[in-house]
Length: 351
Ligand SMILES: NC(=O)c1ccc[n+]([C@@H]2O[C@H](COP(=O)([O-])OP(=O)(O)OC[C@H]3O[C@@H](n4cnc5c(N)ncnc54)[C@H](O)[C@@H]3O)[C@@H](O)[C@H]2O)c1
Ligand SMILES: [Zn+2]
Image (cartoon, rainbow, N blue to C red):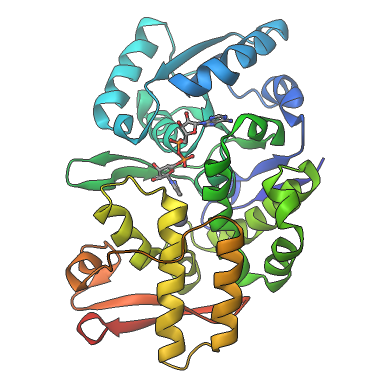
């Protein structure tokens, strides 16, 4: 089974595997037993994923003599709050979970971020396993150990950095994922291709229909490539302090502004797609990128069903609210060509 090992440079003892394979969830019981992860498990999921996959995972674990119980909360970003964390922690106490318990996170990025945070603070920290079930969570949020919840003042403002004991990427879960969520996650995969891997970008160009039709081989290929790119960068830099990790922000400066302007009605990947086209426009203007590369990227985004234009353009004020700014300057990530990106400080008022 393809397996990627994650070894964070600053904590060499925290290494863990990422399994990527159709059906790999079948080896979860043995993994839990062999590695002594916990005595009792809380399967944390959201209301929608619970019905589609949570109940069957619980049954399967029980059949394999794993002591587990389901806990869940209402699906959606609106639940990603400290209040939900407190409610779930109270529920875990009532259900007799303790410091020898562990959390199995089953769901998209909302469950992943909230669940990782809950695990990192419950009884001062317990182990957790990630089972991401959206393409976005698989290629992005489940990898890297960034956990957290939203505040009224903004998204992801309270959080921890805490790595899981393992990540199980089972492509079977994607069979039930709505098409717009596949396209949403695909935007991040295209982003990885643009910033780091021309081969991945070309593969998506060639195999787009297969990917959109959820062909397992094609999905496994782009997932493995994407996770490898993310892992390579986070291993060096868990806390996002160097230029390499900033590259993940490609398309996100304008994208985040657009997401916020839409009051989060625009899916993240859809906003990032427009953000990518916008930053490429600027790169062409500044003669950083060739027009033909910008066109090639736009064509692929369009073919994938992603938007490439927006009625509203983010102004300086919208961009300034992005947390990655310092003073009037901000780090912008530009692609020089497909497969090669770099970051550069720009004065925002000059845009
Ligand atoms: N920690 C990080 O590094 C990081 C990185 C990127 C994004 N994020 C976070 O990820 C979140 C977004 O994640 P998301 O897009 O996965 O959203 P999500 O978790 O809300 O999932 C989207 C929808 O899909 C449903 N769903 C999940 N799996 C399903 C399946 N297999 N079949 C059918 N429906 C399914 C969910 O119930 C939900 O309604 C945001 O909160 C964002 O801040 C975190
Ligand atoms: Zn993103």
